[in-house]
Image (cartoon, rainbow, N blue to C red; front, side, top):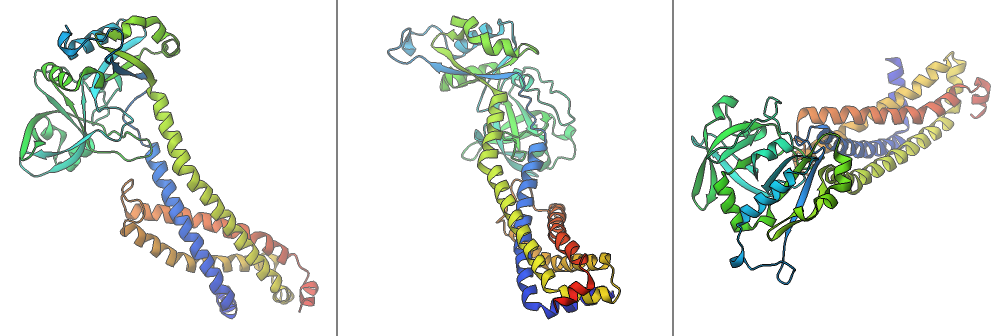
Amino acid sequence: MNMFRVIVKQLWNEKRQTVWLLLELTVVFLFLLMEVDFSWIKLKNYREPRGFDVTNTYQLKLKRLTPGAVGYRPADELEQTEGEMLEQLIGQLRMYPDVELVSFSNMASPVATGGWWTMLYRGDSLGQVNLQGRTVDVDYLKIFRLRDSEGKLLEIRNSDRTQLLVSKLAFDKLAYESVADVLNDTLYMEAGENIRKPYLVSAVFADLKSQPFRPYQSSFFELPTRQQWNEKLQRMQAQQAELWVRVREGRDVHFREHFEREMGERLWAGQIYVSSVVSMEDEVRKCIETEMRQNVEPMMYVLLFVLLTAFLGVFGTFWLRTRLRRSEIGIRMVMGASRTAIWKLFFWEGLCLTSVAVVPALLVYVNLLQAGVLNVYDLPYTGGRVLLVFAVSWLVLQAMIFAGIWFPAQQASRLRPTEAIHYE
């Protein structure tokens, strides 16, 4: 208690220097809060399971012959429908030894943030949700090894009716009490102006994210019937479908090196053909590298710059304060103060300064969260988030203060009393 009074009196006697030091520490701590907040959002979202298993999976991008190309035929001369061409191509792909599964979809890429969005409603009007839609077939669920809300692999079979699968996040927003309540219940989807189309729910699947550093999104899968798929393909043309394959375990290297050469003409069917083969593992890796390069790394450089600048500022300030107080140190040592007591005096002085400086910085940070200036979409504003960011930032600042004080305090505590009094 006596040491605390001495510290308060010393800071008051040097109030001009104290005010500037408090201002510096406040600005530094506010930067720390924002940087730690940004880093925590990215780290938390990155560590969460994506829901898609993209190992050994590939997208086969399709193109269509254009007028003037060898083999091109006008639509009215074609003997195959769009669905039949795609079915022929899928059949040829399934015959390749390395291929385990083949599927097709529309607007369902595991790394796409776009696609189509719509509103889904409960029949009793107790819940509604805006969610991302993906139109897929049954094998798509197997290729990317999607799981149900309990973590088990989805087991969905083909049906003579359109099936609807909703994500766990969408299920929560629809305010059902249990998964059993939503299964085989009728949900309504916007299908035009004042038109809502009914769907029966077949399953609730684990949440998915298209981008590794982004949060989960409410989503659903639409599994049309065979006839509906044929009608859809006829409208949009088969080359607009997304074609996916899963390669058998241990055959990935062979597939990468030899697939296109060994398949040859079998990559053609009617007027459509496989134009390129894209590894989904590589696509996810590109997403991570792009996010790191465009957002994460620049913020880390800013953080390192702030930490280095703050450390040099704190170190220089306390070094100067120590040199100016050599006579005081000498008198304290003459009066019986130990070297440890001298070191503790400087340390507790720095601790008191930071304790005062963090309050206004924390208030500004909380206000920025409440106003939506900081990112509250990728991670909701909660007390736990504030507490975690504050605790980490506090520890980092204290480490900086400790490092900035330690050397000047050690030098001061090694002074001989007569040498220190000489500066008086």
